Each structure stands twice: as structure tokens, then as C-alpha cells.
Length: 601
Image (cartoon, rainbow, N blue to C red):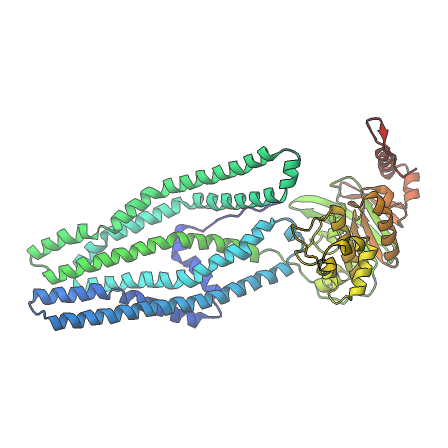
């Protein structure tokens, strides 16, 4: 089940009103004073950028008053140069400080994500695509840097400088101040209306972008299979369709914004259209002098440039809103709850007591009850989708049961810490998980303190040692795209990992599924030898591999249909006997004129 990346800003008003900056400020909770200092330096730098406008105004007034001199011009020019240098230095210092804070925020945020991942149930990962985690941990956290290092100080400066200009304008002449901002207010009103309308388009844009990324990851991972079955055209068709949808959204977004952007630029740049004619009229009416008109002409241009900078920040703010929505959803995800932690009893018998489990409103298991005594074995069999793997995954708390209880040694697993629970069991699932690391490190993942002799013994028991030593680097071989391992070899590495951990409870999900006929018997003997004294839960489809186990549980439609030994279940003439007869028929299946004879009688 893949979760679409979504963009759900509350509204354009909420975004511009500060919800994004409230979230960003929460990220910098360890450095508030330092960020305030960075913002102060940014404001100083932004205001001092107006120095050339003010100096030109002073020179113009001196010329009008016929009080200009070369020395005075040189002095004003020097002051302007000093102020500009201070402006650049202040802005640079602000940027440096904010980037230092951003680096700290990124580190802390990734640590927080990692800590959250240790608290969510394991089923959380099964319902999400790995591409989403990569996007959040790498791309989204990287984008937070733009919010912390740039948006906070830059937006503060971008709004502070126009505010200073407006105060000066009102001080000089309130009538001309109103005239100067008519176009700007119209432009920002238009921008707000457009932002409210573009919310849905923006949501579709980010969802399509995430879908395209997941599709490319999927195609890359299954490309060999696609080529084998000659489905290249179909795969290319899916990616092409995804690209076309993305392009259509871009065209739709451009179409909805191009007119708005054009009008915004026109209105925000048209101060002179209002200032100049009204200024000349006021001079004619003797309400205004020429020097004041020059002031408004100069600072209206400066005000326009600053407001255009504000407009350029809006799309970055929208991107931050999308990131914060995803982060909030992630950090608000349900966590495993520990009920009054209890120390494990040291016993390893397993009990399912009237266990029911519902996943996304669908009942998967209903009133499952059975006991697995310490040192005994139980197989779960049944049709695909019956709930066998769910039973096994409830044991390590992939999810928590909705009703009933699961106990180990008489202790409800919800009263055990995850570390205590994990230490009691080893797993070999059908899904094979290997890390891009050495073979030795992959085997020792469950017991990092294991000796080399213990690791090799586990590999030998799993029938994988001879293959490993045949590799040029042996156990130091790095598992990557250049190392071609078969499915059976990967499975045996996972079995070696479980054997080395030597946990008292062992869960095998069709552990010999990928073993070839020559090695399956030896592998089965090794497993049978090593599971002595352990509590064993096996999920099997090939019934011949579990005949000798202590008990067999038949799971049908999420319910326990039958429970007993192999011979007992056959004697009942129930569901298990039907499955066994179907298994025997499959073993004797004919291909052409050649009969494939099974080993079961």
C-alpha cells in the first residue's frame, strides 16, 4: 500500500499568515536568540540597501537648493560606499549564521526521524513505499534548509525594508504615500486570490511528482523481469503516461499563474504611473515641492523591487507548507505503546489468546487461539491470504492486536520493551533483506559481537559457506549490484543470520522456498538440528516440509480451522486432508509426456 505525497495547506491566508514560519521556528527551538540576531543583521542589511536611493535624494535636494559642491558629492559618495559595504557584510553575516543554524536543524531533524522510526510498529514500513522515506529523509530535510537559512531572515528583511520606506513616505507626505502603494496593494490582493485558487493544482503537482518518482524506482528494480516477459513497451508506456500527466499539470499550473504573475509585475512596477502625474499635479497646486517628488520617485522604485522579492518567496513558502504537512503526518503516526514494562519471564512458550486483528477496517484474523509450548514446533498452513503471515508478524508487534492477547512466557508482549521482545526471536521471511555491506556484516547483524568461528559455523549450517569462500573476497565481499546472488543464496544468508543470533524463538516463513533440490535436504537437516530446544513457528506452503512438526494449525479466512499433528489431521478428513491430497497431486504433475514425481507417498 503506497501512500501518495499530499499537499494540504490550510489556505493561502494561513500560509502567508505565519503557519509555515511557526513550524520553522519550532525547528530552531535550540537557537532562538541566534536566529533573532541573524534576522536583525538581515534587516540592517536590507535597510542599508536603500542607502543609494537616499544619497541620490540628498544630492538632488542640494542641486535644487544650489548648495552642491564637489567635496560634498565626494563625501556623500563615500558615505554611500560605506553603507553599501556594511549592508553586504551584514547580509553575509546573517546568511552565515542562519546556515549554521540550518545545518544543526537538519542534523536534529534527521535524528528525530530516526528516533521516530524506532517507535512506530514494524507494520508502518510495510504500508509505505521506500521512495517516500528517501524523499522525506533526504530531499525534504534538505529543503528545510532553505526555510531556516533563507526564508526566515530573507522574509523578515523583505518585509522590514518596505515598512521603513512606508514610514518615511508617510512622514514626508501622507497623500503621496497612499498614491505610491495603490498599485502594490492591488498586486498583492491579486496574488492572494491566485494563491487561494492554485491550492488544488499545487496538491496535484506534488502528488504527481511523488508518483513519478515511485514509478521510476519500481521500473528500475524490476527491469530484468520486464525484459524477460517482453513487457518493455508496457513499462515504458506507464512511465510515458506518468510524464505526460506531470507535463499537463505543469502546463495547467503555468496557465493559472502566467496572467496573475504578469498583472502582479505590471501593478507592482507601475508606481511611477501613479506617483509622477499626481506628484506633478501636487507641485502645480503647490502642495508638494520638487525635492519631495524626487524622494517619492526614487523610493517608489526601491519599494517595487522589494515587493517583487516578496512575491518570489511565495512559491518557496508553499513548498515549505507541503514539507511541514508531511512531517506532521509522520511525527503524528501511532507508536507502539508499552503497558507497564515487565521483565521477560525467561520462558519461551507462546500463546495466542482469542486474538483478533483488523487492518484498515478489514478483519484479517478472528478469535485465533493456540498454545506453542517451549521447545515445541507449530506450522501454519492454509490458502494464500488466509492470515498466516499476519499471525507471524503480530508476534514481534508489526502491529498490535485489536482484541485478545499474545503472550510469551505468560507475559503479554505489549508489556515488553521492544529490545526485550526482539532479543527473544529470530525471523526468516520470504522477503529477503540484505544490506549493501559485507557478507560477514550481513550475517552478524543480529550478533555483532559474534566471533569469526561462530559466524562461519552458522554459514556452514545454512549451507552457504562453500559459496562464500568461492568468492574472491570471501566473507569480506560487499553485497552490491556486481555480486550476483541467486534467490536461494540470499535466503540462506538470512538463515545463517538467524542461526547466529541463536534466539530461543525462531519464526520461518517458507525458509527453504528458494533452495534447489540438491541442497534442500541438507538445509532441512541443518535447520532440524539447530532448532532443538527452540520454540519454532513455521509458515509453509509445501506440506512435505512440515510433516514431522509437533503441531499443524490450518488457517482459513483468518480463523483457526484445524489444529493437530499431521497424522491426526489426515484422519479427520477435513480441510488439511484436502490440502495434502492437492499437494500430492501437484507433486505428480505432468509436463508433456514427462512425469514430475514427488518425494511424498
